[in-house]
Length: 192
Length: 214
Image (cartoon, rainbow over all chains, first blue to last red; front, side, top):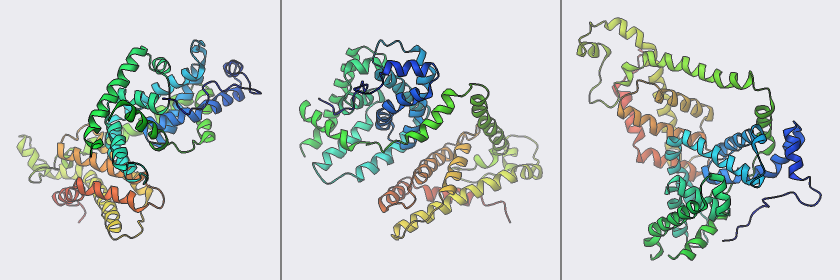
């Protein structure tokens, strides 16, 4: 599946090289830090929003992510793309936050998903689409995250593996298991 | 459904499932800048510890006076502090107990009454199709009180815990309503109230715990 992504390495013509920005931020240059933030925050926010489904939490976890990014910038070795490293921090911050409030989120999810189902548009096959959304939210966290990262956000298995600190094979296996569960859950609906 | 079809359906979700609003970049940056670049001490610790300290003080206060009321909920019959003392074989000091617990019972009953009033108003106005007017501040305040009660170490009664859980869920939904909530938003909350029988349970609890005010 090809994803319609914003560039992973946005430094292009006329733009300051990201390595220089990182060096600047490390030296306390807030303009450089802000530039790094501006380049990556929108996508990080979008990803976190997909994972938590709440504007307020997405803002909170995005802030946590960039606080950690700038506090640990010295630990970035350049072995992976900077954006992958930032997203790894984002996934970690989000998981930490979600575990902290898991109980509340689990209960709120019922109504949130019900609300999003009720707000579905009229096109396509609404019943199947709504069920897919619901079944997606019912997946265990590790499987749902893999589906969101791979099928919805368009990350590769290599990037997902780097973000989550797991082997690529594990990411592939999780995706296969998630899809299998979704197919099973939607089997009855698809034939209706 | 085969894998290709599922993949196609999942791909469609990219445009429809949890599509993020525009992030408030400047506002978030202000927080990040303050947190990440400000001197680590004392601001971060003070900001972390002050609310905790405040919560501890309030929580301790509630915990000290909570048991008599909290044990009432969900039981077949209401129990009075003096009855509890009898049951445990401790010397009964009804006047002292009543005096000690009266402030909390008043506060807690007031809390339950305020929750009930808010939910009843919301439910009735939505059923009549009238524009819903509510105080977000009030809902937020009630949500905070609910969470304080939930985190109280002595809320051991399962029924009360479940009721507080459900109230927290509903109040959290109310707090998240837009300034002028649309009918479907309110309908979902109304439905949650119905399904969980929140109002009947609240009324039973209030009937079993009449206000301490004359």
